[in-house]
Image 1 (tube, one colour):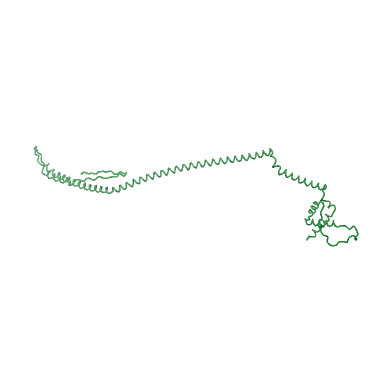
Image 2 (spheres, rainbow, N blue to C red; image 1 turned 60 degrees about the horizontal axis):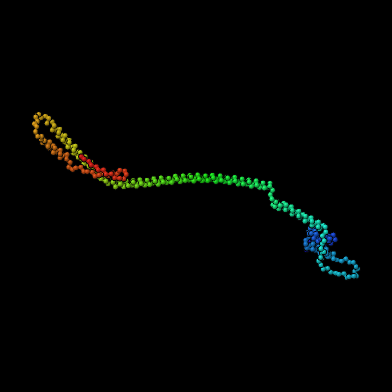
Length: 305
């Protein structure tokens, strides 16, 4: 249901459409005017229907006796408006609107499309050239800096490689020396082990040699003691016999066959029996001595009285 305000708008629209001056205007302009006033399309149709109904009602020109009055609601018949005729105002408005639209389109074209279609000017070209040259210079400087950093890194890597190679060679030399020292130590240990084994094998022989030396030493000491005792006894006999010979009368000695006195024979036989050893001293077996290099050297020891 329409509100009172909307009904007032419809009534005003009906009165507007019923005005002869408004009827002389084109239909499109009248509809546009009503829409500008805030009427909707159904309301405009309703106003046009009411305005058409008001125009079709005939005014009474004759007396009431001609026709009988008709009562009841009249049926709604849509009014066919005659085609409107354009006058100079319509053409003027159309020309103004078309000119405004063309001017706006031309302004938009000049502002947004034409700069992209026109070739760049010499100044813009120079500016672009300078900007590109500056960018190329910056890129070249950056490239040179990167090359310098790369060269420094390469030099550092090469120096590090040289140090690593030197250290590797030193380590290899140390390892080689250690291996050589280990081999020498192994050889020396083997020689020492062989010498120890030889010494261990020679211990019984050395013990036997020491035993024989001690035994010969004891026999020699005993022989020397006996010899000293015989010498002392001979000295005592010589001393005991010496004074008797010197005190006797001196008689001339006749040359003849020499003879051995009886006491000398007795003393000589006893001295011979004492001085002659009962058994000859035994010969010592050859002694094997190490020369410090794991080799045996035979040494023959013999003692004579």
